[in-house]
Amino acid sequence: MKTRQKVRKTVIISAFLLFPATFFYLSPYLIIDGTINGIIAGSFLFFSLLFISSLFLGRAFCGWICPSGGVQDIVMNVNERKVTKGNSIKWIIWVPWIAIIVLLAIKNGGYKEVDPFYQTTFGFQLGMFMLY
Image (cartoon, rainbow, N blue to C red; front, side, top):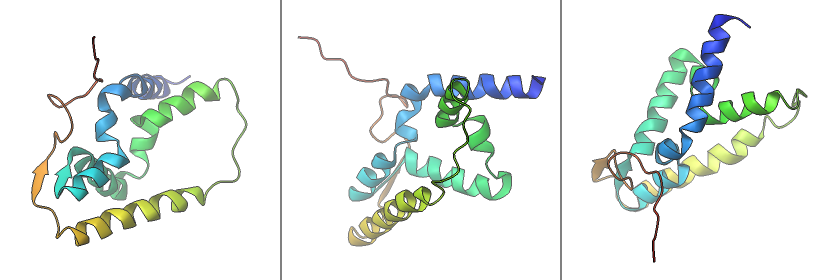
């Protein structure tokens, strides 16, 4: 395996292992929740940055940093079958999601606040533990 691929696999698997800490920045739900409250959340900023960077860098995020890509690299060692169908699933997921965000923003009169740490504690949220 080439050195570049070793580095890529290390980075992408590390991103997968850090997913609990970065979950709220990759959460599609948090964008909708923030939009309902008129807040541009950190996940909105992150997805916007991904969209803009993909125009120039293509799928670099998916191949180098995406936690789901880490899962794919791990699972690929178990089963190397290629997926030939399912290209339309992205449209079934993304179009309604973006439509909901736009409609909620219009319904609520736009955004009133930008909060990159919306619904997170100190920038990252690892979970809440309740002790009784």
